[in-house]
Picture 1 (cartoon, rainbow, N blue to C red):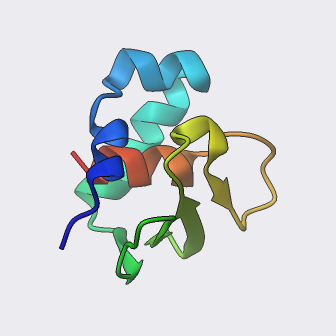
Picture 2: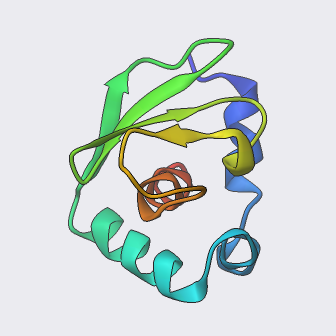
Amino acid sequence: MEQDWLKIYRNFDDNALAALASTGLVRRAAKDVEADKVAWASPPDSKQATLRADGQLVTLSPGGPAKASCDCPAPGICKHILAAALWLR
């Protein structure tokens, strides 16, 4: 069953995501989604959802993209977090 809090991520359009990161990162993240590089790593629950995005583990929480985490070395909101948010749409 889908968790209601995942809708938070669907409310972020490309412009809102670009405001958190950059237009270029959103564009690269969209290419990963188009290339089918995003998928569930484990089913979402009431506290988090875990996805794989281009080989990286992304953990989403009810706090939205700013509170999401990724195991890549990039600081802050990376293309993997953006790809996960785009994929959820």
